[in-house]
View 1 (cartoon, helix red, strand yellow):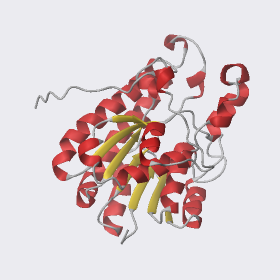
View 2 (view 1 turned 90 degrees about the vertical axis):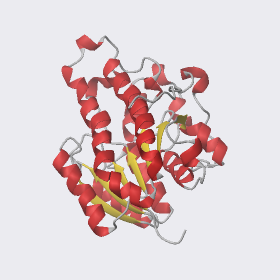
View 3 (view 1 turned 120 degrees about the horizontal axis):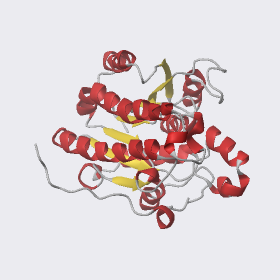
View 4 (view 1 turned 135 degrees about the vertical axis):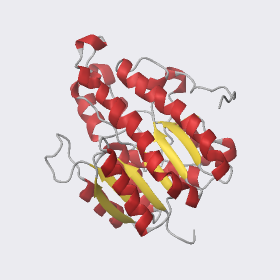
Length: 285
């Protein structure tokens, strides 16, 4: 490529966001890394925006740490204003930011869990909408790509109705945004990773070995998802063939010939969770 990609990865202090940012950095991209964790201890889990940005730079890109609470629209607007001022375009936006309440994986009916479970609809579904809204003109300038990180929880019962509603909403939102963006050449894709080797999932799997067994050992790395994002961006047919659709990350990886860090080809969980949704082509303006 003739010029470095300009990317924003939200929620990248750790987890999927961090891995995606590192993969983009390894491709030489300039990556704005956002999150609330500025110093270790800001979260019970390790990781900060500064640490991820430094790792992006070490990987070969340019990491830019931006402390940003994606529940605060003014901070999000300031983020994209900075991108506009410094680059005037945005090639890739990956929405990973999500509020994960501690009781998320606790079994039980929703009314026995705190009402704060709905926080993942604010920082998750709503925050992805806001980021796309604020970044729209920059994405149009680059004929860029939006990737919303979703989950098979969109289709099956997973962690309760708040989580399911957030993921189902992300998939339909991606479809509708793709319709609006298509004339401007911007693609929008929703990705369903499998089990991912993040700091949080490591802790959860270790705490419940009878439930998860050795599945963590064969889980996808967060960087694997970032490699698939890069393949989507580099696909000249993405707008016509991928935009507005929902994909398992592993299935796209197989189609693009993308491997994980250790050369593995993670399997698709389709047989277990089912197929991603297909939406009606009917348009009501």
